[in-house]
Image 1 (cartoon, helix red, strand yellow):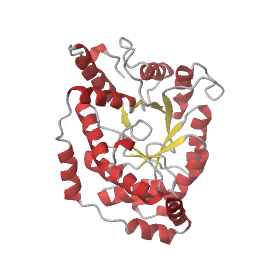
Image 2: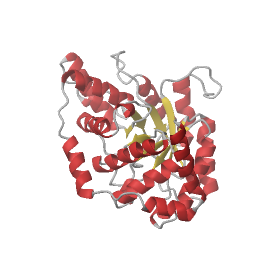
Image 3: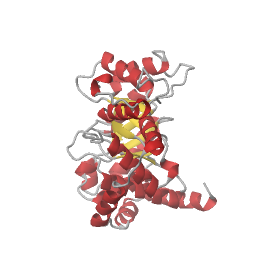
Image 4: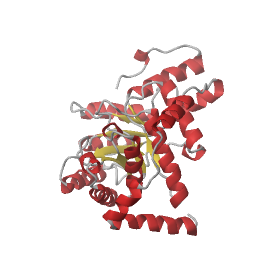
Length: 329
């Protein structure tokens, strides 16, 4: 980070010390041209990616998947099987890359850690997993709990072995203009995370406008988010290309202003290889190749992986594998 960027970041970080300054900054951000954003996202979705470029994109998309199960019926056996699949998505093809992370509830973290680390004590193992272990926290998916409960939720997940935390913001606080409350909760959660990366879920389907998506993106980044994420996957309006475009523009502008790079994770509703490649084109065209890396872009998904595997098999063997060729998650 250059001296100029360091100074700019220091100035922006000071916004969190004043509720009035934070509000003035967020409402001073340029408004989003709704029609323009939707047209731009639709235009990028028409790009045709074929042959070797498509094969490269499929492997990259697999490496970007946060393989997720967040159901009340999750069991230790189910999440262990999911973790094994994350390490070897296609057991018949050792050249198939692993996914980016496995994402589960805090109570399931120890069971995933056993598979990823080869030990029940993830923190004490000398073996480093190639797949990250993510856990949702802070009263997921509603975010409606006292701060001490949210922080305990986060701390338990980190202690159990999670090296990534997906937190949800309090949308009620955000939508009623209590930006300082949202900011302070993210800062406190970031502190409890320690070395674990913090992915902040905006739940964009409940934010109503693209302007709110832009404000929430900047608010999360100012508070220390390592990633900004669209959705919990628990509301009907999950990730959409226009919303993701607005968030990508926010991380681009944030890096210009501060020198700090923040990742983006669309989650919910991305089910096909065609969809995933559209998002990769959007990343390339909006923020550039620096974000075409699992460290900076992820897909929150479950069914997406199987479609990627089917398309990959078709490109490598010429035979189209059906859904029953791979485990159902």
